[in-house]
Length: 264
Length: 311
Image: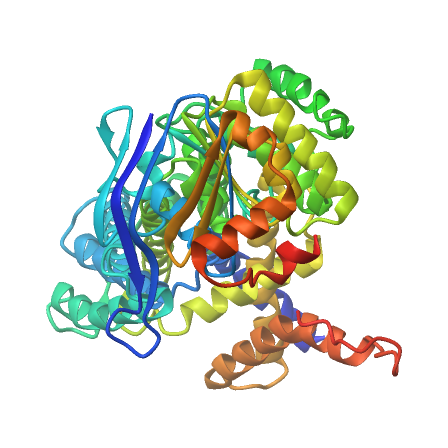
């Protein structure tokens, strides 16, 4: 169980560019939840994920994971609990290193790294097997440099890396937004497959309302640093895009301003 | 004929020097290429290594021990830059300049305020080796010792950068966001890289000082540019591909070629005081090749696409 208690974050405090990204946010994520997150531009979706991951500290509030207080832990020490895939396909992988070397880095997430050899032989068989499940033919290119892969292949690989060691929470930050529609769909299918296969607790930010409704067991909508909608279970299953837009206007008092979200 | 003869003699010396300096170049390779960090500390730590070893040998400490001390001294310099950069968050290049400037004072302290520490009447590691191999020319002895060190160092580096920790350092230079997300303290990795790099630079300075029979507080000036020039020459001549060991070897080749080029231009009548200008030009040209290629050889298609690619 992950809890965010009264979490706030303001960027550029006391300047003309002050931006209250999160305002006293409370969220409890139950184990096994697959939550989709939607919201307008600057609603605080990515900020929330980055605060959980520890990219920057909270101004106030607490982040708890299974009773452990993460609030003050640096990013690299939270990593053993979290799997992450970013919007930018370049962010999640090391371009100048081989597919196998990238996987070996991910395989040791949260473990101490000493003077043992970076990849052991038996690992390669495991990686080949895992890569096969992506159905991209990467299992035959184990030592190819990741920089030679397409954006979609890199995102699929990052997804595999994020879940190679089962994370307590998987954070997906618009991880299909930079891909062409066909590839995005494929990566999304893969995401759903892996999440249900491994029963991963997941927080997925998306700009696609249909995906947000179709996937997961819970949907939250954010606006101006607050959660304005939290829909679960049966209610979510029966949700339509137009309901969502209406609910948004009622809750926030203004029309949806995310062009990408409306167009997709 | 006379020109050829003196050129050949100069070549021998150049190759030996190239091998001794290549240890510094290997250090520069670690920061510049592996960590993607322009580390100017080396201008200071090269002299620190040279001065430490000259002072110790002139006080009758074993030359081998003096080399070890220089290695540790260099490592400490790298640690300081790493600390300034990662813990105090000073931008990398500035952090390294601060260490470099501070080392100028520290080196004078180590040398007891002498700008030059001569090694006369004491035997260096090269003299010791020479007394075992009688009748072998001094250049050949320098070359053999240099190559021994290079082979050992490349083997150790090849092993280290293949380990879990070494892979993490390589990945940090490649994509530190990813490495942090995978649970590695990237600050520690940068510090380890800088320590390792400057240790090698200090060792190289110590070998050069023992080889030339003096240590000088000014001997490090321009080291970083020489290191960069050597790395780039090696890459241009030997290519980017193949294994890590190959890349390290190409750095050594680059260092030797650099010395040979210098020897040739000196023989052609250039003054040794012109060398720094020449080296700087060489590095500037080599670093700008990709930019010039792009600007000169990519044709912009007129009016077809409205947006310019912004990379």
